[in-house]
Length: 184
Image 1 (cartoon, rainbow, N blue to C red):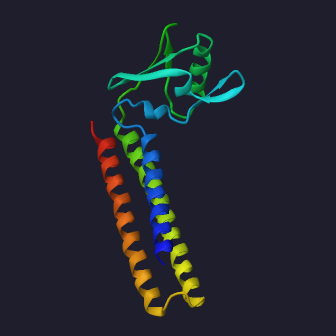
Image 2 (cartoon, helix red, strand yellow; image 1 turned 60 degrees about the vertical axis):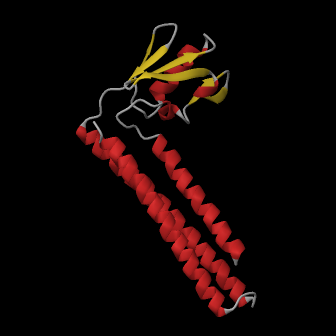
Image 3 (tube, one colour; image 1 turned 135 degrees about the vertical axis):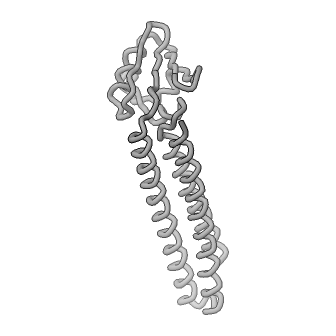
């Protein structure tokens, strides 16, 4: 029974971590190199993460700078950013690539909050599915006579408490991200 609960907790923890990762890709009012996470550059025929062929930094709150280590990669990095769905325009001066982030409009902020809510809802569904799987595991244990009916009820209550606590964590993450996005 403890194994089922432990497994459910670790899977729910992964759902929270996954949501945080999704949130890091959402643009807020400040520049962040996390915006470019997951962006791949076709480097000598191999899709390579941008942070493996260049150094990324944010000199101020509205600019991201990219300095590829290989001169041949400048055009490739620029092309990858333009092709991405980030809506960013890179400026290449031969030494460094700069990306200026315009301030977010009110409508764009509201759209980003909707996206954040969608990600949160998906994470909640994942947590609920984990709860269902754990409850099914407990019912199987009870059916196999490994635990009593009282243990089953106690286990289901523990799983529900755990589920509620992880859903609350997801809500806290959403509230924090929403505040970040709406901040001017």
